[in-house]
Image (tube, rainbow, N blue to C red; front, side, top):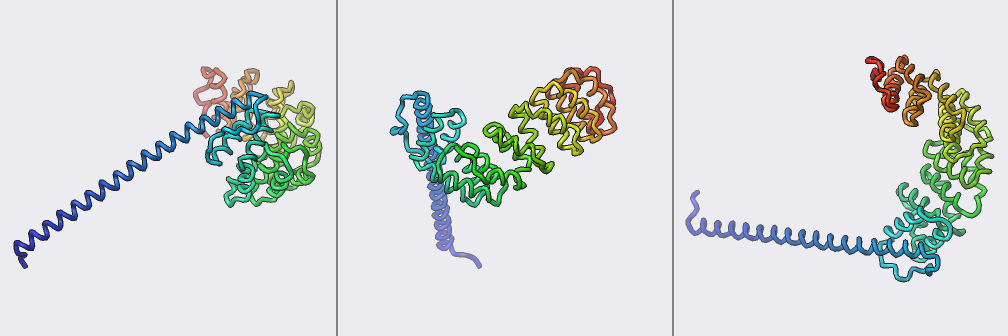
Length: 334
């Protein structure tokens, strides 16, 4: 069926008008997107200037002990940013500076927000809230952190327990949780044990001397080494002969952290340990710590029956700057 000329002209005009409308609509959308982008950049620049001003203001006030603790001229900023800023500055100051930051956070409502976040559905938010509550004091904070010791997420329980160590008193139930909660035997628990060793050495020593599962003994040994508890060196030396490979390894690494005179002898024994995983860890430790006194024993591991140990030994020899003496077949891959 052929269309008449007037009908063809009408359809052509309609198509042209629709095309024009679509082009105008596309231009309008593009203009809106450009304006939105410009407004967003302007908002970010303004926020960045206010953030920089707030940071500078807080640092100036914290450096000046005579400054008033109220910070009345602090600019209006999102609560999340202020929480991060206060937490960042709290890692840089101690004593009165932390107390003044805590007072500012409470006045700005940051403490209430953190307490609410401690009940958030996302574990990550609860972990951050528990960690950042460490600078605040008071019964409300202690009660909230003690409740978090029963959180379903182990990382939240650890963060709450670590924050409680910064409170004035040690909650009675905290050591009970440390003894019986499997979360405190996880590899990530070393931060709690190190903090306990630094802030409550008597409590740490009491738990260290008690019989405990291997999983808990390992992070406690590493924490004792990092915290520099030299009076526990004899126990560490005894643990280098423990039947559990993980305990032997942790004890040797703790002695190395203490820079104990017998650390090299313990590491030399680890280089000949029956467990190939421990021999591999030992040669890695020699290379990373640049222990040239054990270079000969590391060279012996180039012919180890385990391919992973041979590979790590080759890396350690190269790290020690002795790559020219590595045999051609001494770095067999795993």
